[in-house]
Length: 276
Image (cartoon, rainbow, N blue to C red; front, side, top):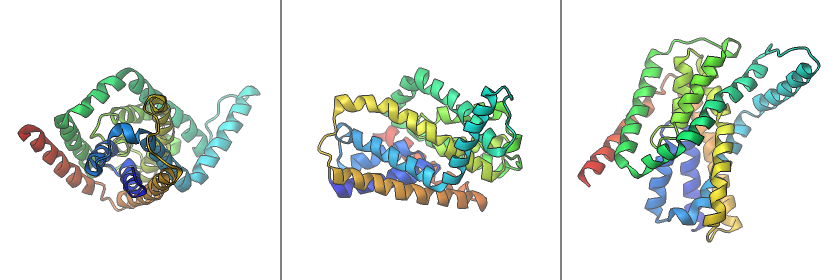
């Protein structure tokens, strides 16, 4: 492993974690292209996920601070017997993030092995990319939602969380799935985008925690502090770029552009899996 390879992997992770094109497939392909065995880079991949997590904090730090503040105040009021009041946007967002994380976590725990088995099937990955493209197209072309955070209900968060759970499947984009789920529930585009990125925080933290146990068996390989810093920094910067780029695409109603990309890549993978 070299700093050069770590930077490339960091950029790929940062871009594809938030652009709706499926990060798992792209990262696996890049590792193979660079000739980096998975057991030699596992710890770095975990750190790259941390880098993308920092990206979300950087872009949405104001919202995150307000969510934490309001959640603490709400908990304190509840302890004083004043009830459970979701009387502002950030209180409701905080609770809905927790609600959305529950089905995602349950799906990861009970269905994770099934989803992970799909990584060995190029055909499934290709089909999943086609599905991602179709979902993006339908959501963009049919969306007329105007619902804001104050209009969110428990069922909305649960459904988006289920969409996020299915994104464990290689080829299904996490950001794409959650944005599609939000748009189908009638959220306005600003809320759909923000909610997608905010619920990625516990999802990435949870996935990282589950993967961390494997570090003890695989070790850190030949990684140095320089390699780790280069990888984390590149994934962080690429993540910021990807988040802002996706926000811009959604505002301009061009989310479906990513459909062409996922359809093309999916079709190529399917043909390759059949012929070879």
